[in-house]
Each structure stands twice: as C-alpha cells, then as structure tokens.
Image 1 (cartoon, rainbow, N blue to C red):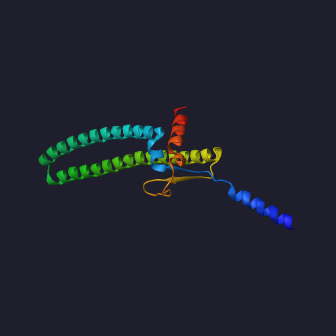
Image 2: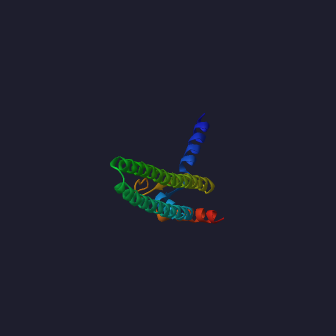
Image 3: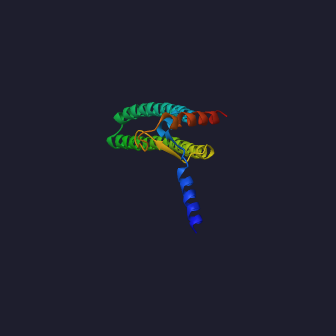
Length: 170
C-alpha cells in the first residue's frame, strides 16, 4: 500500500512539473494587418465609391426634375402645383429609402466578410496552438487586455500573421 502511495505521489510530481507552453497574440494587430482584410477593405471601398457615384447621379437627376416641376407648378393652378410638389416629396422619400437600403446592404456584406475572417483567424490560431504544442494562446487588444505582460518570445502575433498571409497568397 505504501508503494502505491509513493508511486501516485511521484506521478503527481511529474505531471505538475510539466512546463505549460503559453503564447499570446495581439488581436487588433493580427486582424488589422492581415492581407485578406486589407483586400476586403479595398474591395468594399470600391463598392462604396461606385455607390456614391450612383447616388450622386440620381441626386442630380432628381434636382433637375425638381427644377422642372417648380417651373411647371408656377404656371399651374394651386391645386395642380400642390399635387406636383406632393409627388416630388413621395419620390424623394422613396429615393432616400432606396439609398439607405443599398447602403445598409453594402455595410452588412462587409461586416459578414469581416466576421468570417475573424472566425477563420480564430480557427487558425487554435490549430496553430494544437500543432505547435501550446497549452494556451491568449489574445489581447487595446480595448480588452487579457495579457498585461508577456515576453517578446511568447508574442506569436507576427508569426501567425506571416503564416496567415502566406496561406492567403496560395
């Protein structure tokens, strides 16, 4: 019985002495510096610019219509003028709703792409940790610092960033 107790005690000592491998990443740097995010931003910036050009041309066309309608309304009876102006106000509301809807769709699409990228990065970090024998990989950022201090050798941000960019280029 004594021998079993000593064996269990020795096993506990060995398992508690095993060194845990811990690393950390700066989430903000990792997400903001990844090439795939930069490409997404460029892609959606192009969509935003195209959308702005479209809304500018619609706005100019509507302004011309407003001017023409005002000229017509001045020559018409008061009742007819009110109908014309009322029609313009309805059209303006519809155009504003359309612009808001399209702008919202662009924003939602961008946010969906970013959310997918964040999930991809988290999965990659998890796989990296398993593959390289890490017990923990912590995340930190300016807004939520879970790592108050870490040595540079435990900072995996650049290593993982380079690996993600290499994988993305493929």
